[in-house]
Amino acid sequence: MADGGEPPPKRQCVQNLQIDSSGSLLPQGFASGLVGAVQQESGRDTHGSTSLTQQVQRTAENLISEPAGPGPLSSRDRERIATGAYSQREEALIKREQDGDIAFRYVLNNNDPQNLIYLVGLKNIFSKQLPNMPKEYIVRLVFDRRHRSVALLKRNGAVIGGITYRAFHAQTFGEIAFCAVTSHEQVKGYGTRLMNQTKEFARTIDRLTHFLTYADNNAVGYFEKQGFTRDISLERERWQGFIKDYDGGTLMECVMHPQICYIGLPDMIHAQRIALDDHIRRLSHSHVVRPGLTHFIDTATAGGFGRSSRYSVIPIGDIPGVREAGWTPSLASVQQQQGVGGGGSKYRLVLDRGRPPADPAPENLQVFLRSLMEYIQGLEESWPFKEQVAVQDAPDYYDVIKDPIALDVMEERLASGCFYVTLEIFNADLRRIFENCRFYNAPDTIYYKLANKLESLVNQYLTTHLLFDEQEEEAANPAQA
Ligand code: COA
Image 1 (cartoon, rainbow, N blue to C red):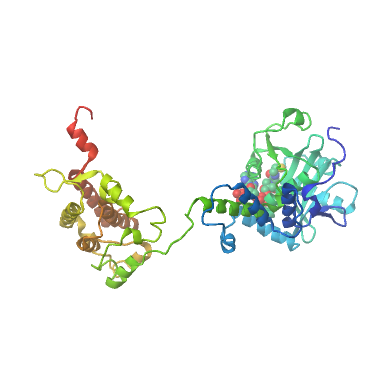
Image 2 (cartoon, protein in one colour):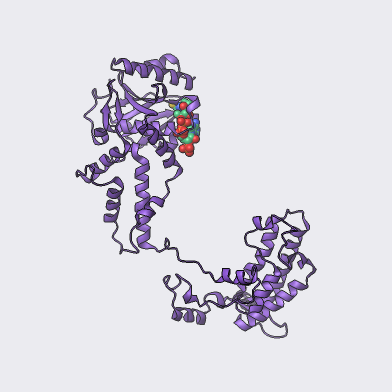
């Protein structure tokens, strides 16, 4: 016989497994199991005094040596850190386990009548779900005394799924022979929970470190999602000759981490997310949400949507968060001198063909934008974009387009003299006119086509009226270009 006889003593989460009346072993509670795993890790007894989250949190804090930032998460923030879809599905099943709707049993063929009933149930499911497997083979392995099974039971005791594996104790790996969930209970997360329970039983009771299995093509995807890979890290001499070779199957391996309690994964993942979030908070202020500017809302409310001429400049330093992000008035003036930032773009403006191009200084920019606006307004393609869309013309327009704009709004902003302080801001508004139009209208409509046409005319205008530094260099040194 290849395996090492009786299983060695139980350890780690095993204190959380209790023997039921039939001699089967069942987990007492995932949370206590997880605390057991953490105790094992920290080597001290914390019975009932601290939660797992606190323990992992503390471990994470000890690992972090960077200077403290705004501080760790508040308890309200902790609750707000979302669990992912995987954890939510597992948590729902854990709840059902706690409510007694479902249960997992570690089953041996030890002549116990209840265990034999479970094994018969498993044999039936495997025979049905794995029709290519000879039934005699399934019976032989399921009832083999060297094999272990984990049965998934409904409240009424019916077996609805299970995994059978052979434990090679001396080699500390197990070979999964069969895994199935009854057809009408598939794709509900049972297969995942079943595998996690099996890993936990195999890790704590059988003291296995690896699972191997020959997966057929249909099952490779499922096993991959359960942490199995095609790379086999287990030394060949530990498994070769112990497990059977199957033609057409893919040999896959799963390493079971000694400190991971597989039946408490959602708690562990949540604790890790919190620790990670705490760490990020120490390094960054990105989680700090400052009050938004009311300036634009006030302006819009005062004069209808974007129609007020009361635009006024907000000093940059008064915007909440700007100073905290490192902005200072002296830095800003240095940047302005160096031509960095909004006012210092690397292009010049052709204001008059007979004169050299001008710097985009505020007064030059205003002249340039007014000429551009005049040009756009004078084009016959601009008629649909001159005014905001009227609700009576398109009742759902403002449900679809959340950031409307039109040339008349731009005119007012331009007239204020302080809104379009860079060409980029003007350009962003203009492009939004075209994008909104193309988003709302179908490509074969006149509006869509006019948006394209107008945009292409604007592009042509900009090509001939903006001179970028590279173009100037090329003009000066045509040989190098
Ligand atoms: N191929 C690819 N992915 C699969 C899959 C398959 N054959 N079967 C399930 N999955 C995916 C699910 O979509 C799910 O993905 P998600 O986590 O991203 O949502 C994940 O694997 C687990 O699904 P889950 O609901 O937990 O599994 P299940 O209860 O449906 O059970 C099997 C999965 C494989 C046990 C079940 O489909 C079955 O009994 N199949 C027939 C027998 C079989 O082929 N056994 C495997 C070889 S022994």
